[in-house]
Image (cartoon, rainbow, N blue to C red; front, side, top):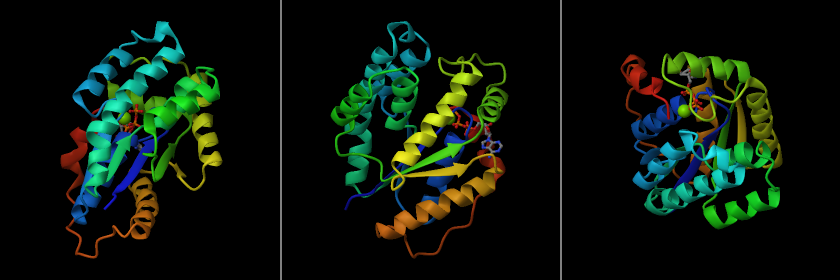
Length: 236
Ligand SMILES: Nc1ncnc2c1ncn2[C@@H]1O[C@H](COP(=O)(O)OP(=O)(O)OP(=O)(O)O)[C@@H](O)[C@H]1O
Ligand SMILES: [Mg+2]
């Protein structure tokens, strides 16, 4: 039985990592097998590539080289983790995926859309997300959240970009959502986290029901959120 592939997208500090974690907890409480993963990364090889990309070492090579590095990581991630989990009928919840390459390297890196489309076809093939949740916040809000979370740690390659880059990034994700309304859902992530979580669950539960994956067994009680705070504060 095929599982369900859900991706979270959007700019920095929208709450992607927070809600990937919360969604997987909710699915597990409902007895639905699920894994949380992230891009770039998700496998040892892809995490090694992540470190190189986020260090900024690839940036001087240009957007095309960065897109190729992200794609190399994605090939390993899909082959070793995402496809096997989907084949086992699991729900795969991924923090960023190919839409981030379209937005960061494609649109903002001024790459030819044909190159990005072809790269995505070769890399992703048929394993396209069933549902993409775009957490939408104004750039200033997302950057302020990301900076509060980061505390004194240094900014990474993309956090170091200015606010106009992040405002353009927000628009790229909204454009992707407008172009593929069947796959993408835009959620107002300026709401408090519990309200964002409820909006996400409303969309995810519809898709699970349509895929015959919504379990009818009793739901385990929610854990106390305080214990997961440290985990949620960690960046992915
Ligand atoms: N709805 C919200 N309201 C207020 N703060 C939030 C909300 N959602 C997340 N946060 C907080 O904002 C910070 C950033 O959240 P998170 O790390 O989940 O975002 P992200 O989208 O994964 O960011 P990045 O792209 O930088 O990885 C965290 O400290 C988190 O607790
Ligand atoms: Mg994150």
